[in-house]
Image 1 (tube, rainbow, N blue to C red):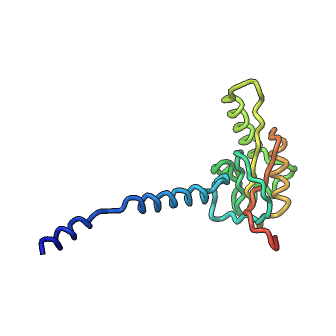
Image 2 (cartoon, rainbow, N blue to C red):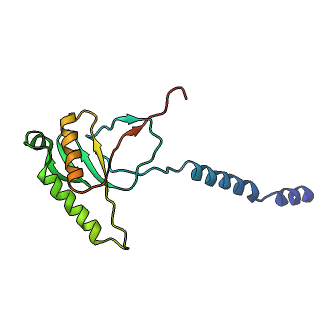
Amino acid sequence: MDRKHRRSKAALGINLVSMMDIFTILVFFLLVNSSDGELLPSHKSVRLPESVSEQQPRQTVVIMISPDNVMLDGQVVTSVDRLLHRDGSTSPLLRAALVRTLNAARAGQHGATPVRMEATIMGDREIPYQLLKKVMATVTRAGYQRLSLAVLQKPQEGG
């Protein structure tokens, strides 16, 4: 009976090699499946259109167009109704806010190369084209060299 007790005591222990293998696999899985896209601010009232483009967006100023408001980096600039019913091809309120953002970026620039400001428009898929056209014209008149439209990436069919 003494021999039996000695054998059962010696068998106790944790196999650390197997546990380390599992954690290594878990770390590799998390590294491979981590997201490499830019996280844009979202709003529950904005439903983006879909696209099959492979190119990832760059870090930019975000103009969000919901069914009710036009926002610049999360701050409401003007209402959609006000922008649609205003005469002219641009919005003075949005342009002033964009110029302030551009000037702040230029004031904080480091180096001799000028700041190339880019803007991304996140527009609800149901907004009228006339509204999108006014916002795009305002962005270009405010001095932004590059303009992008945010979309949801959908998988390519048949590929």
